[in-house]
Length: 328
Image 1 (cartoon, rainbow, N blue to C red):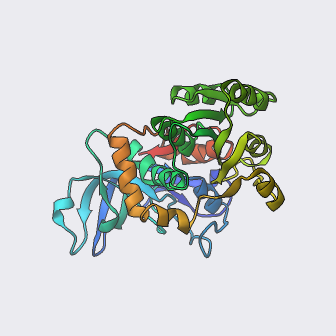
Image 2: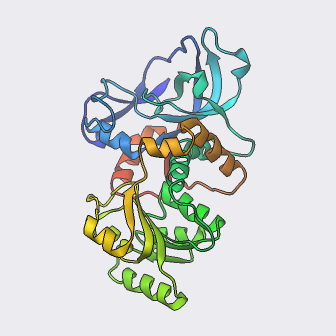
Image 3: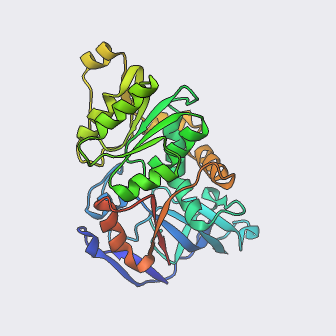
């Protein structure tokens, strides 16, 4: 098979598209003929030799990637042969191997892809979708909610905008550049603004003032000055929900400011998110169901498997919209 392998830690150019041996499923495992593989920002961190959430760097050489969708083409000993030919999606967990034409995983990680959902959308929901629903579990949304979403054209941001609008909330979407602002508008945002420009905080405040509103929740994955300005839109009782800082600098509030303004701020990631969502598998199942029903429509940006290095560069420079997908 062809796969993308990393032999040496370093820049995106170190990802090499090459032939390697076909993997063989072991007991309780299946092999998937991959139709779509997910690329995560964490993949770029691990590629550089950092550990991320893992206890040690990955062993080299490695085939990166932990989200795949496709068709079961082989089963291991003791695995249900009825899985052969099924369209499935799986998050591979701690074991990499997704950037390839064939990938092996445990059968109990599989979800059958719902009718009408393509492989790329299934991959987006098995990772980005489950995380989004976990984040949203911290703050019930309804018609009285006024939501500010930073990075609103990203994979998670896109889904938050859609979910909030489905709940009847007012949504202010912040995105970087005209194309991303247009995408946020297409997803239903009541007001979409370019956070790379200088006047977006004024325009957001004018919009809220005209409607007699204050933001009730900020979903923030950018951090830095953007987060500061977004948090300034919160009214008393508002929440600052953090799930990243792609701008390079996390934003934190002092205890004094939190108390003075009667707002809260905290991370939506980690064990608490998983616990609130009923566990990772429950979040995955819900995410796939939301997409199959058309309530959530993941944005995907596709690259050929052979161009994994280009996909990494685009992701690192924030040049993507939605979930990055590799297709063999």
